[in-house]
Length: 167
Image 1 (tube, rainbow, N blue to C red):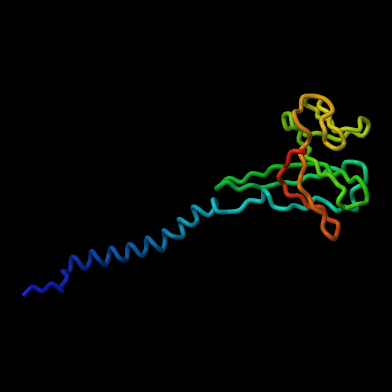
Image 2: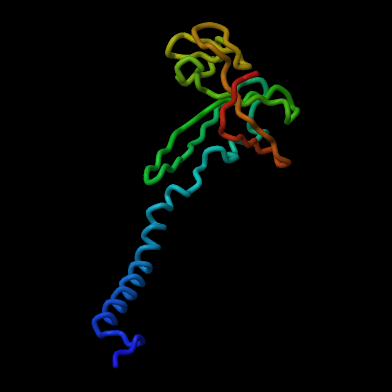
C-alpha cells in the first residue's frame, strides 16, 4: 500500500534543505541588500537652513564675507564643496540686509570686495559689480546671485544655500 500522504526520504531532504537554504538566504540577504541601497536613500545637506552669522557682528554699509561647506552624498561618493558670499547690512533694521553670492555670473570665479573701488571685483575677466550686486563692467550676463535668508529673534542670520538670481 502506497499512500499519497507519505513522503520519501529523498523528497524530505530536498524540502528541508530548500527551506533551511531559503531561511539562511533571507537572514543574510535582506540586511545585505539594505546595506547596499542605504546610501541612495540618505539625505544630503544641500538646501537645509544654514546659520552664517550674528547680525550684531556685521558692520552697517560694508559687505561682510561669510563661507560655508556643503557635503553631498551620492551613493558611496561623498563630496564637500565650499561656498561663500557677502552680507550687506544696509541699516539697523534687521530686515534690511542683502545676502549675495561671491560667484561671478560669468565663469563662477570668486569675487572680492574692494573698498577702494567700492565694488566687487572678479579677478578672472575684470568684471565689476556694485555693492548691491549689479553688473557695472565686464562680461557677466547677470547680477550676483542672492541667498534666501531670515533673521531669527536672537539676531542670527540663516540662509538656505540655494542661490537665486537677482531680480
